[in-house]
Every structure is written in C-alpha cells, then in structure tokens.
Length: 104
Image (cartoon, rainbow, N blue to C red):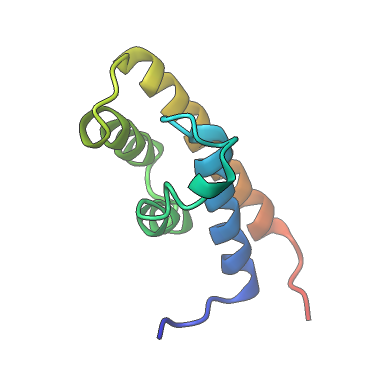
C-alpha cells in the first residue's frame, strides 16, 4: 500500500491529474468519461517533477517527448507549445497551493 500524501500534496496531485487530462490531453480524450484514466501512467512522474520544482524545461521536455515519441504524435511545434502552456499551468498550481495557509 502506498504512503498517504499530506493534504497540500494530495491537492497538487489531483490538480496535476486534471491538467494532464483536460488541458494537455494530446490524444483528445478529455470528453470521453471511460478514458478518464488514459494519462494515469504519466501522472506520478509529472507530479514528482512539479512537486520538486524541477526546471521548467525538464517538465516541458517530458510532456513533449511523451506525446511525440511515446504516443507517436506529429506536429512537434504544436506539441511543444502545448507542453509549455501545460508546464506554466502546473507551476502556477504549485505556487498557489504552496502559498495557501495550512489547514487544520
């Protein structure tokens, strides 16, 4: 059984999941409820990168490589642009959650 995350990290994990599914969504399944788990295999690694404040380019490169090489998608320029946008959103979520006062 896995270790339970503190509330702030659990929220970040959920936000990363939502961003990957609804915004990054390189194969276009966000509107398909039965495909909600499509990006779960990438979630732990992306969460780890975001949580550890990895360099922006490292997150972007992971998303780009995943979409272009692992998924075989074409349009590298568009894929990079989307990866950069997603990275910015993920970083903003990390900052928003980190700046909130702790809850009891």
